[in-house]
Image (cartoon, rainbow, N blue to C red; front, side, top):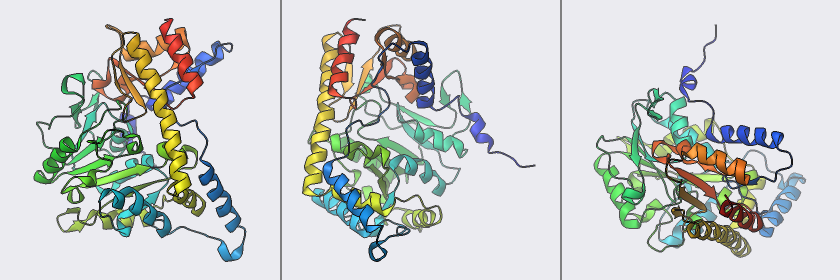
Length: 404
């Protein structure tokens, strides 16, 4: 008789955003006359930039001719895209990354889940709390988190590093030493960041404790403050202890076309074993790269036209963030984020849980957001709103909240 991976049975309920989708669908069905505005899931709404569309059309035309047809992509991804990434994302910031240290994929979310396969089940993971749930869920599916403690809304073997207003959303070093440290910066969901000095201390901590940092920089394009690094490799020693993940989804609108990459420096080792070699082996065996057409579109993001167009889109979303942040502050809400990221993290009214606040917004204002408790124990009492909607709907949502 076949057997299942019973680690899946330990997962609490459904995925956060699946639960939200079901609640919203039920509300819409019961209230078909209501106009529901979504400021919940972090999906972009602006169309792909013209330079990207042009590159897509050109690549499609190439696929129709035998001489320019492309089949399977190289394991690491096409060199033209990896070189564009190096020149624009790293070399331009004084960071030296080699071509064979970049692995093109179908997105940072996929890599976040897949990266656990190259690590032993004996490793203890630490996560900033609250944080993107995929990190913990993927480790739970692999049997690396222990048991889910319903009363604590936490996993028994996971080290949680609370990030709250009390510590300015900057995690403290944990009392128990982890093997793998997840850091998302700018953070999803809080929208907060780490300065270069603060991040450098984490690099030193990882080096001193022979730990590895898995650094999610999916929102780096939204950073506006000079003392916030765009890459962990801007910190001395990081190439010996950090893996960095990037995405084209949020900076260039590729949520529907799927493209991302992971950087694993060859200096990062466990004993004598290079993690770069392990990931290359995994990448080649379980290919999760992106098609030629999509990689050409990614290359276009780095063209002069692509840079200008994506910069304009980022500015559009950050203007929405400003509308939300200032609108909520004017109504007496305490907010965080929205300066270096398209997320606003708001404190719910006293005595109102994050899921209760979700219901209030949905039923009384017809607005969808994300309950903070879905991102970890320290998320209770907070709520995430995103700036990825249209300007019109963003302004309309703030007016509705005024009338609650």
